[in-house]
Length: 177
Image 1 (cartoon, rainbow, N blue to C red):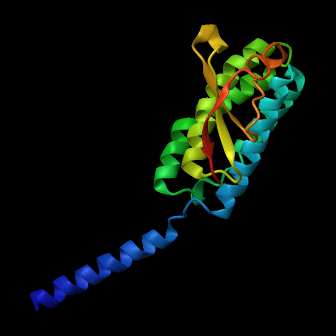
Image 2 (cartoon, rainbow, N blue to C red; image 1 turned 30 degrees about the vertical axis):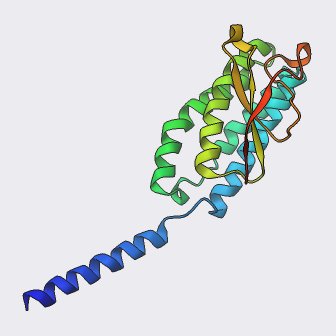
Image 3 (tube, rainbow, N blue to C red; image 1 turned 90 degrees about the vertical axis):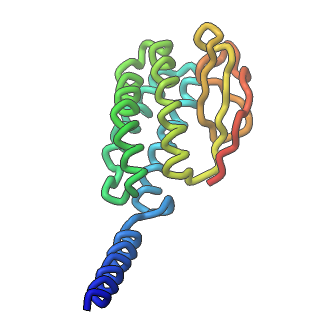
């Protein structure tokens, strides 16, 4: 009788494990994909605006980015993704808010874009990209400490140095969708 109870317990445990695994979404969860696609789109708009020395457009994209973050369907995230989101989202939101509030101070926007780019890289790696992205690096920015950013093209369009040095940098990594 003890053997039968132990087998039933194992069967229940296996069923529970299968059920919980079925509820855990993978990187291709449609809700997560849509939210990430929106955030990546606004992030790239910020990058392109900064590359063109356009603080006003960067601010608009920063505000849209914050709005998109609010749409992330956190219940669709797998446990590891949820932890990453919780670790990064407040900081990313704060950086985007600074970009959105400082249309007249492009250097301040660029400082916050540097920090936002680190968070976006981690998010894209955790949640997947909905298109191929490139992780670019500029060695000259921030007193030659350097900075990275994500781009939708292999062609370098530097958001940190803008029109002063538009092609300064190199592709460090290709991130496939």
